[in-house]
Image (cartoon, rainbow, N blue to C red; front, side, top):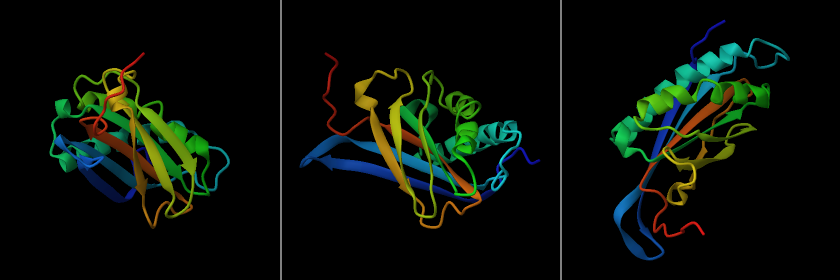
Length: 184
């Protein structure tokens, strides 16, 4: 069975926030959500060797982080926070998403982002074309850095098909606009 991602399409969306609450930001807050719509080799099958999906997760995460850096025109040290997620088409199961984005997905991302040491927060769900996923973002250096606790959202009108999975990586620079929450 194939151990690399069979990609139907990739999407990269960059959001630059210049004003928040009526105030111009000194430096825009930037987010990029990158997604790959891939075939699910286990769609419609109740069992299978999920190590295949773990390998696909490592393969696709390397592609996503490279595309995200390119979309942001950023270097590894420019990225301050990240998150990941997946939407599984209805012929799959939620465990397919877990196999893709947990065991082997993170290492290529952290490796591409220099001093990234924290876990990559995640979310996953089942859905059909047009399903929306909100991906949590946290600091790549300290999961307790409140300034970088945020979220990014993605919807792809024609994905996932029943036999597909949308695999998502979110990267961010600058934290939340007008961040000012401090720990107690």
